[in-house]
Image (tube, rainbow, N blue to C red; front, side, top):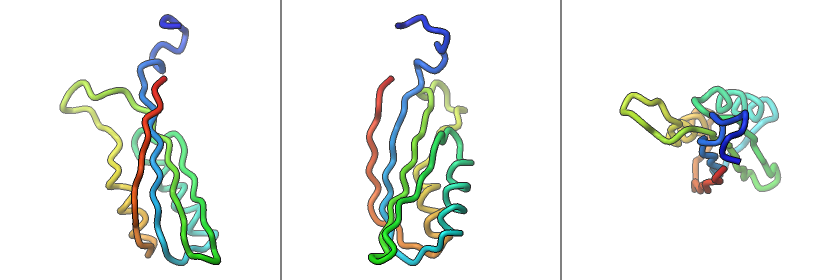
Length: 102
């Protein structure tokens, strides 16, 4: 339905980001990373999946935002994820994303 009560939400594009990383990660760091990423602009959800025995993980982030209308619009920057991963002493690897249209 084009005219729903959540009209403002209809135009929001949802993007899933999957960021692979490697390195040693404690449970404390996992929740810190999730908290930091959740606070980034337009992030609606952040989850770290981690395989301890392989020291490999993936950061899964759901971003919901309206398409950019003006230069002044502040949108989510995937480079911020790399920064956060690196700050926790981890090696950022590959990032993939898919757009889920409303």
